[in-house]
Length: 225
Image (cartoon, rainbow, N blue to C red; front, side, top):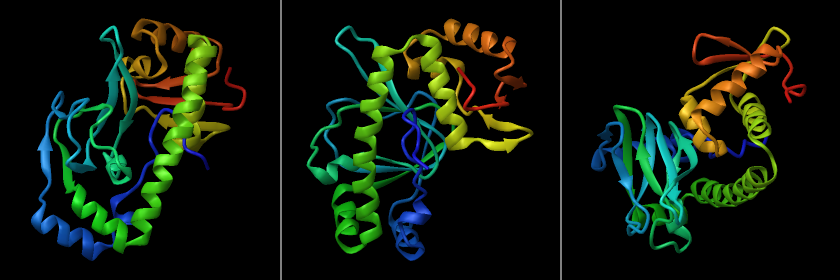
C-alpha cells in the first residue's frame, strides 16, 4: 500500500537497525527528551545529525517568502529526519519542531549513519527509498494544493489517512486523529475554522462521524467526496 502524501512513510527503527546495532548505538547515544515548541533544527542549519523519533511527534516545514509557515509533514515514532545528508545535502532545507511534550529523539551522527549505510544494506535501501517516495508525495501534494479547493483537499487528506492509518469498523474505516484541526489546516493550506466547518458539513452529509474529538468513522472511504 502506498503511503499518503501528508505524512512521511513510517519507518520503525527496529525494522531498519538490527537489535544489536541499535542497542550498541544507544549505549553511546542516549535518548534526548524534548518538549512542545522545541526546535531540532532550523532552515539553513548545517546537517550534523540524523534524528530518529523514538516517541512523540515532530512537525517539519519551511517559511515562504512572506514569512508564513508551510507544514510539510508530522513525523512520529520510528521515523527519521535529516537523511538527505547521506546524499550530499549540507544544510537543512526545512525546520523540525517538536509538537508533543516528552518527545524522545535519538541523534545519529552523519558519519555513523554513513557507516551503517555502507555496512548494513537494509538501512541504505530504506533511506534511498524514502527520499524517492518523499519527492513523489510532495509533487502530488503540490498538484492537490494548486488545483483543488479546500473541501477536496480535506477529502484527499481523509482518504489517505483512512488508507494509511485506518482500522476496519462496521462497513467502513475508523481512524484516530493524532494531530489537531489546526495541524490539518496547515497541511492542506487553509484555516482551522474552515477545517471545522468542512468536517461539520461532511458529518451532516453522513460521510463521516466523530466519536469524541479525535476518533472519526468513515462509512465509505471511496464514496467520500
